[in-house]
Image 1: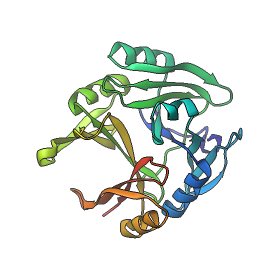
Image 2: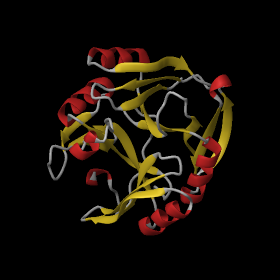
Image 3: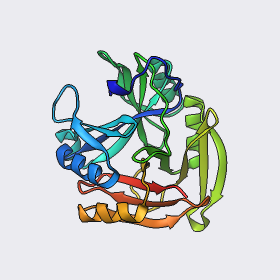
Image 4: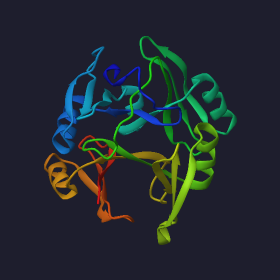
Length: 261
């Protein structure tokens, strides 16, 4: 992760800056994502079986073994994200005041910064981070980048109000998805970040989903299927001309693929 930290960067609070995959087999997951989206994979600093994922713009994520106690609780492999904040302790306290929960209290990680894990009032989880140095901006339209952040939740407008108070995110539009409800777009500092939509009845809990940028969606889907992934929905066209699909990797973690128009 430290390879992407730059003293002259300008990424500010409220932006997604890092991602983490909790999985039952980090080595196999690294081979899968390397094959599907072209990430390079190498052992992460500190060892413990962790793998560092990098696109052409540098490292962007790490894979970690899903802890056994968590597996025994029935939690499947999953992706999560880190949002940059100015003060982890104050933001974690604010999350609790706004109806969220703090799952991991603020803690210092030597040489990296301070971190906490929180959930919104509907149960979706992400991490807060305040880093010891700044992170450089990324071109999220580039191949292999994590380009879109999607929250499936009971109440998109209430969830966005929570995150707006927490991170300063603002609504940037809505799309009518018919029987599926309204898709609420959000952004920060003039940059589109993602969207939120109502949780289907057959989905047991609220969660974030992250989309990986690919040049050719159909080819990427073929590569994913060949390695044992399941396609949950899509491919489909979305407003603006892009195409997307939602999958589960061979270990069961959900993710999306996105192709620009």
